[in-house]
Each structure stands twice: as C-alpha cells, then as structure tokens.
Length: 65
Image 1 (cartoon, rainbow, N blue to C red):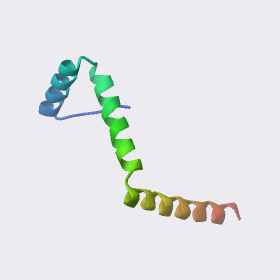
Image 2: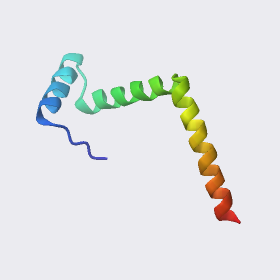
Image 3: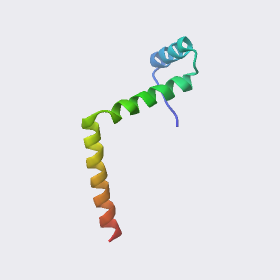
C-alpha cells in the first residue's frame, strides 16, 4: 500500500508521531484502527454494510446460476 499525502499533512503527521514517540507507520496504523472502530459503532454505517452485503449476495447468486 502506498499513501501519498500533501507535504503539509505529511509534516504534521511526522510531528504527531514524534510527539507520541511512535513511528509514522504506527501513527497511521493507529489512526486507521480508530477509524474502523468508530465506523463499527455507527448504526447507520452498519445498515449500509448490511445492504451492501445483501446486494453482493444477490449478484453472486445470479452469477452462480
């Protein structure tokens, strides 16, 4: 995975990582983890995921016939 950030955002991320005494990679992993956990707790997001799963399942069933 490659992540491209604007220079100012990259500099801010590096500063946050240094202040937290972690690598930039660890700061990014932590931010991603936090985002996923936040989405998991969001009922509206969960409903959208369920609808997506149902739609995907319908497509797969049609393809299997």
